[in-house]
Each structure stands twice: as structure tokens, then as C-alpha cells.
Length: 393
Image 1 (tube, rainbow, N blue to C red):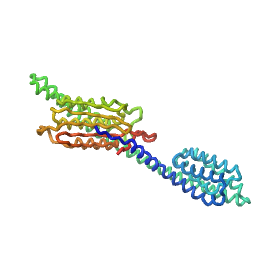
Image 2 (tube, rainbow, N blue to C red):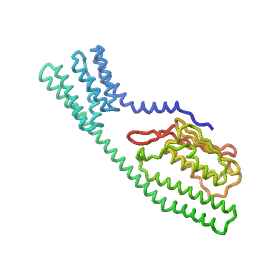
Image 3 (cartoon, rainbow, N blue to C red):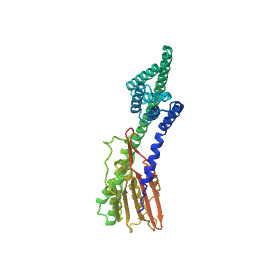
Image 4 (cartoon, rainbow, N blue to C red):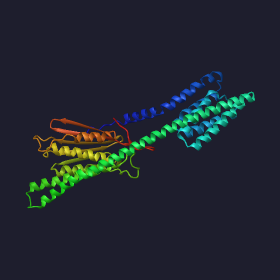
């Protein structure tokens, strides 16, 4: 079974994503270094150069980690002011960047304390360099104005972020309401209908002792309706979940690959197929992937029942790897047209479900054989947004 092995590509993809995320911070750090370049020509001493590199780096990191970078920058500035031989120069503007980032992302009290600390450092540096009281007043006023401007920009960024968050929460609530409405509709129509099919089939089996073939067909109808009812209930539970996802403690746990294949194997066996299963890999199937893969396996099993030849065995194969989960279903097409209603949307639905978690469905016909392969990447957890998926394609 030709499973995809792309761990190196996955690592490269992760590195590109991280580099893209760090690009603004790197750009700011380089810009601050360019601002200090003129001073490097006039004061080429090693202490000043190390100071400029540290301040520029801290200014860039403030975009990713505001509070640690601001504290580190404050410590470097305090040390620099206490050493008269060190030339600070334009690298001091890194403090403006760090303070803006703190106001935008840290708590208000923390931002105020950082601002007062920076103001004290900058005014002290002005006093040490000024030659008159007027120079001290002008320099201190400039730094206070710059810090107030930085605070204003930070407040604007923070306000815009809060508004975007409120808009997103409203959209999530609207989607959750739509899901609840769809869930009610499914319960009132589809689940009731499939439950009634089960009851009719079971009652027919109890009347007048039907012949073995009819009894077998009624049993298959009942089993298929029960399986459809369970799938619909699982879909209802998925519809009830909000877009933010569930807490980690509420998400279903990992399950062995064999357990995931049991439902499809049972459905195919009841339909008269011989099923061979093969599970590889030491990892279990991640809990967040279980509902999606289970529903998609149900679609593939239904496709086999509709179009497969019961005289040939069906192969169900699953492999878990470092990159994700691969599932392959191989069966032989029936040589005669089956007497089933026309369909054609099952594989489309499976593709849509897997696309939602970054996965894919591939189908291939080779002579009289038909192969369907599902791939789904492992979910990547985020500390701020809950479980999310990253496409491995």
C-alpha cells in the first residue's frame, strides 16, 4: 500500500510557516539596526555595537513576545545609562516599539509601569547628555510626547483587535445557531425516518416467517438504517459544536485504528462482503479526527455496497504515521448494474468533510478494481484557538 512519506516536506512547511510569522519581527529588528548604522561609524567601540544589536533584537522580538522583550530592553537601557562610556544613539527607538507592543497586547497596569520605567530611563539619559536646563526640558518633553504617541498607537491597535474579536464571536454564535437549527431539522426528519425503517423491517421479519433470503434482506435493511441513524446522530453532535471547538477535556480520546475500521467492516460483512483489514503504525487515531474519518468510512462502505461485487473480498487498510492517518478501501466493481437508486454525492461529501481538516480523498480505477484513499493530517493544537488542522499537501 503506497502510503505517503513526507516528514521532511512537513518540517520544511512548518519552518516556512514559522518564518512567515516571524517576518515582521525580523523586519523591525533590521530597520532598527539600520537606524543605528550612522552611530556605528562615529562610535565604533565594541560595547556600543553589542548594545545596538541587543536593543534592535529586543525591539523586533517585542512584536512576538511583548512583555519579555520589553523587560529585557528596559534592563539593557538601564545598564547602558549607568555606563557613561557607552553610546546609545538612535537604538533607543527600540523602546518606543516595545512600549507600543506592550500597550497593544499587555495588561494596562503592566503597560503603564513599563512606560514610566522607560520615561525615567530616557529622561535620565537626557540629563546626562544635556548642557543646560533648557536642553533637559526640551529632551524630556520630546521623549514624553513620543511615549504618549506610542501609547495612542497601541490603544488604537488594541481597540481594533477587540472589535475584530467581537465580530468573530458574533459570527461564531450565528454559525452555532444555524448548526442547532440544522440539527433540529435532522432529528425531525431524517432520524425519525430511519428509525421508522428499522421498526418496519424488524416487524416484517416477525410476520409469517419469511424465507431465508427475504429475512437476510430485511436484516440488511435494518442494519443499514441503524447505521445511518448513528451517523446522523454523530452529525448532529458535530453541528451542535461551536466554531471555536470544544475544550481539550471534552474532545474524544484517541482510538486504535482497528476500532475505527470496525463499523465499516461490520456494515460490509452484513451486506455479504468478505472483509480483510490491515492496520499499521504504532500510533492511535487522534480523537479530533475520529468523527470525520468514521463518517467518511461510512460513505466509502456505502459506495462499496452500492457498486461492489460481493464475490470478491474488500480490503480495508489504515496506517498512522508522524504526518497523519491514511485509510485505503479497495474493492471489485460488480459486473452487472446493481438495482439501487442513483446517487453520486457520497464521495463529494467525504471530500468536503476531509477538506475541513486539511485532508484529501483520492479515487482510482484499475481494470475492474476500485480504490479510494483518505488522508488526514494530525491536528495541531494552538494555545489560543484550540485544535486546528494544518494541511499536509
